[in-house]
Image (cartoon, rainbow, N blue to C red; front, side):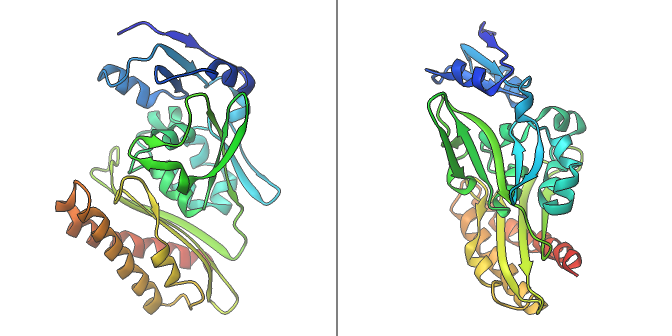
Length: 290
């Protein structure tokens, strides 16, 4: 393994100073779960490694001014059992609990999962259903971007080499809102995702849907929002007929997306599977909305 310069800043300010002038030979790590694999497989050969795991100001989950805010260096185990998430954004807590093994959840961070830009990222699909945004900080400026706009393709996101992802935030759901996340994996032990779905549903006192945010993972180059399906619920009663119409649309979108991907042979399987896991997801949401 080629030698590299190792930096371990203890503050965001220190980290962004180190990242000033960074190029493709600079690697940021926190848990380092993907980094170790990439090094061992000779996928990367960095000259500079910036380890941010000591930055305590990037490890938190808090509710503030109507938003839930999460530090990018918070690990999955902390998010899995977060009282705030379990109460207000269960979809994300569930998704974080589904990531890999216990050891991976103890090391892996939500920021790392986001920047890794996997098409099958558990936390990404859940965060998209929550309409989350990310905060990107460099020494010169701070940018805020919707997570939905952050991705350009597998492993490719709109973060510059001199930037650090510091925070993820989304509007705190109200008491008339419920969320859920479901996925189908290849095997139970480490649950490599085949397809996933996340949703946030808000209803009024007449049982009509006032807000619907639905995302799908592992059907495209990155997790996506499915607004065509959302429109079939908004303004309508949350009954079996309308939910079934939404499920049909999800299956249709999945079939089209997968057919136009390198995995088109899985289109029929995934379009059938999404109806099953999305049906379970809506059952959880309706139970929580009662």
